[in-house]
Length: 345
Image (cartoon, rainbow, N blue to C red):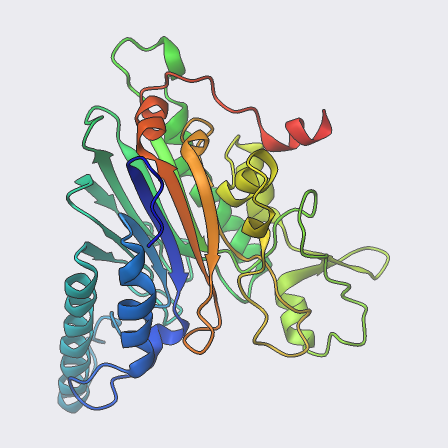
């Protein structure tokens, strides 16, 4: 694990493909799950970790009209899911939280290190999301008066309209950051960070991964194109970027974009997914995070960590200076201007 010469806070996100797969046999975790946790996640010593596709760590509620045999099978599946979820907490040394399942079968989760953060509350958002996010509010030990709203999400893979609704729900969490700003003597504000599989793309300005040419003969997966792009009036296709536009318009910042353009770490903008799928346009930066305009200034490094052989998504690692994080939580810095405005200057 890399050291930085100062105390840091380590944030991460990994969409582990289908949770590493089903148990190899009852009570035996799959090899990909074990490798992902023991060889990739544990060495990074995350203080906060968002997870996508916790497929076998949570189950759907039992249908009240299920047969007795179906109820037995469902109970066995829930016991196996609970066992896997406990195993993740034990291996990581972190407290875990799971979303309920939605229409999709890949619930989200997040883990926090209790020596770094104090849990405050959690919230459920069930009405809109195909896959409900995991939303946990916590505080950093040095700044107990400022709640940090955090969320791990997995946007709908199949519906541009659905992702737009989900993005608007995320903006409701961002709105909590705005409370009274710096003129509140009681420090009545919140910080925000969230990470997830966005299942769509960042706005192209400032990106290093070229835009997809949806008219290219290399695009053979036409269903995927319909899921990830919108047909324009002239018959061309435009990639979906609604979530990124929404968060940027709300004044939030992508820490990878901040690292690339403010700290010179261009590698932070590498693709995180799409490299394992043929005919879809190649690697894309769909796993991303967003932070409020104060806290993003604590970022000192962003890395895309390789998960080849374990998952079809690479992970995102964000390193914060703990000293700067404290200053930003206390709002002892001016907020960073919206990124697109900076780009235009």
